Image (cartoon, rainbow, N blue to C red; front, top):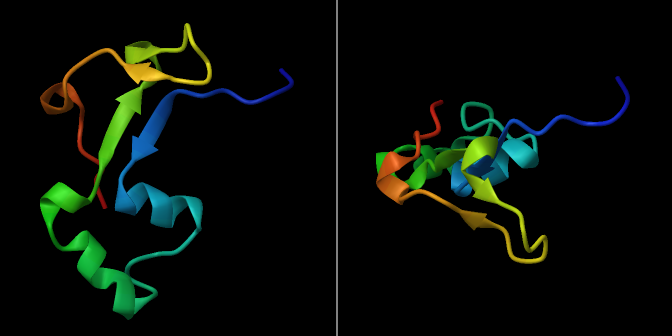
Length: 71
C-alpha cells in the first residue's frame, strides 16, 4: 500500500512535543508540561472527525468522550 494511514489525531502540548520528537524525559526543562494530567492532551480517533469541510475539520464528540494521551 502506498501513502499514509491516519488512525487518530493527537492534540495538546504532549502531542506537539511528540511531533517535534522531543521526549519529556530527555529534556528536563520541558518536564513540567507532562506533570499536569489536564495538559497532556487528547487522542481524537479518525471515526470522530468530520472532514466534510477540509479547511475546518471538526470533532464530533465532546472532550469528555475523548481518550487522554498517555506518557
